[in-house]
Image (cartoon, rainbow, N blue to C red; front, top):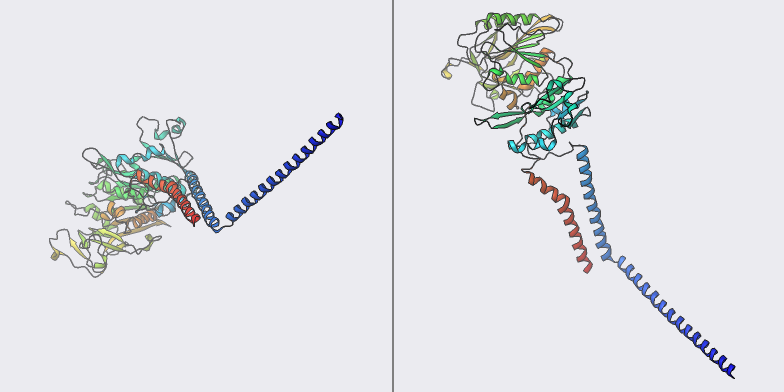
Length: 550
């Protein structure tokens, strides 16, 4: 019995366990079914959201914004990399394009076929910091122009060099004395083969000093200086120009201003890579044998007998190469007269009158001073010196002394007035003293070319207007063709190799690239790098949130 009860108890317990297991399985099945239904509902909800129009509009818009933001960031990163790799890759937004090169500079630099290295002997930030000293962005402008010049040709490189940390650099340019205490060379132009030139800040800028000793920069000569250096270092046969410093024509270092009557003309020639020197004909000096062109500019006295002999001897050295003498008379009558010069000019078939050309044609009067009849434009009268530029632009001359030709003269006119021009004697007191013209154009510049041999000449040139080759007429009044014409004429006469290059001085009115202060240059960067992208992102989120509620 006991065994039967025990078996019945065990059977009963087993049955209960089986029932409990069945119930548990049912509960688990119900739970699993509920979980599956819940998951299906969630998936259905997600699908519903993903396929809803709100989702499509909102997140698509957000995706577009994200892509746009990524593009903005990428563009800024790429621009930064390009600017560091290609420094000249910038935009000049100044009203005067003060950071852009002149066409002549681009033309010259792009034609360079020899490797040229420009070294600025300081770091970039230090060089640009000088702007604060002078109050205008001439140094920032210069720094950018160096980069622009280098960008014109793969043969031109520009770099900054700290000579204090690299003594070996200075030893390469021993003639410049770069290691000397207080050395003022700031720019080195190196053409290799031990051919190089050094320039000071005064070579890069025109400067004026007031009575207190304070200096200001008036113009930049960076383009002129660099182009002159490149021409001088790459030309095989540069011409030599000599300036007479006697008969009342002082040397530049004898002048209180450091300039003389021929300074602007000398600079014009230096820009064509001429070697320029002075010669005092009243001393024991002779005209150098390698001189190609000799200038006598606005003397206040007649040339001495010995001086005239040296001029004639110079012209007679024309054997294998041409020689040229250029006389530019004083705009006013020399008190003691100029019998020696007059006699020499007559032997060349020309005479210079003691008067000024008085232009009566309104079409020939200057737009600068339209009421001045002694300031007028002149027509070209010889095609030998007008090749390569626009002859529609005329030459401007002022207080021009008329040139006439002796009987049987071989001399010819270079520049003519209108046929309506008269002459005004130096002694004229009023317009009633004006002498009526002949009805023919009057010559304001002329030349006598005497053949020596095939292609070799003895040239005598007379330019009746001193002002025509002064600084204002060559550099300031650029609407006229003075610089181009005279540079081209002298290049032809001396067979100076290469094309005529006329580069004017530049102004710098702004203090930075198109903006007025350093603080203002930060504002655009903040706007484009941060404010604009963040603003667009916020706007996108707001639009998405508003549409999501609809």
